[in-house]
Length: 322
Ligand code: PBG
Ligand code: ZN
Image 1 (cartoon, rainbow, N blue to C red):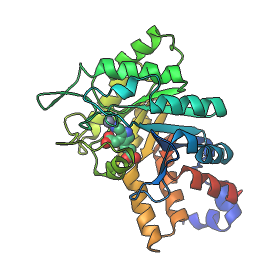
Image 2 (tube, helix red, strand yellow):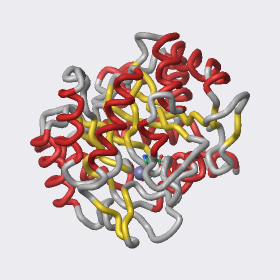
Image 3 (spheres, rainbow, N blue to C red):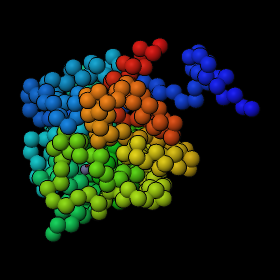
Image 4 (cartoon, rainbow, N blue to C red):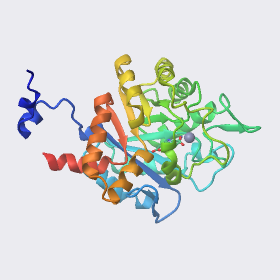
């Protein structure tokens, strides 16, 4: 008889044979920076998450630096929104200001800049609109301009999340032509049209004013198509790829891990976070235990990098376990 229980007999034995480990350096913490002064506005649907203005960012920057995680993913919330998302590629826009501030204070902290127009457009869609249609090729120059502007501000990694076709090639070309051939692209390659994003849209004030994102984001039913999306982004020059959301798509993550050899990120998105927080606040689950189990599952499925709103808590818990 196989006695699997032999190696489970003590904490020391279990630690010795543990297959999957989460490192603090695997983790990236998303933050929301709003234009204005003296803002620390709670996001109701995401307990523990706030919109900050640049002048109140220190609190979260210091916590991030102390935590030992790798860095931040930054989302800007501009005061001015228009049809063409002009604040997105304004060199003095809120996101650019925030990146300059963060890199000035913490030069070693990795700052990943999300590239998408939806926080900056008056209609809340991720692309340019004409006659009610979201246009693909007309959106690419704007994403390219935005990427160059964010790289100029000091972003370490450019992360396009819009799901327009051909954007990685367009952004790579624009970065190269503007002196940023050394700036890597982390592409949100397999990003599904998901109900799990709704708390984020409260946080980022980026809900579409009409319709949904199903003509550009992927159908949740399509695992094979996700691998085609990833292969295509790699061909276009992505340095890293992402699967998003994470927990309902671990099969996609695992398949991507088996097929591709570049670093893979998984985004443990807002809805996944909010569900855990809500259940924990009701006393229905043990928050720490569930968070560590979820993050371990994402790692076990094959993620090298985990973007999560739990990052600072998880780092604290990992430290306590030492
Ligand atoms: C912007 C973007 C979204 C998320 C990351 N970048 C929302 C969306 O596509 O509507 C979702 C992140 C989350 O839910 O935590 N395109
Ligand atoms: Zn978007």
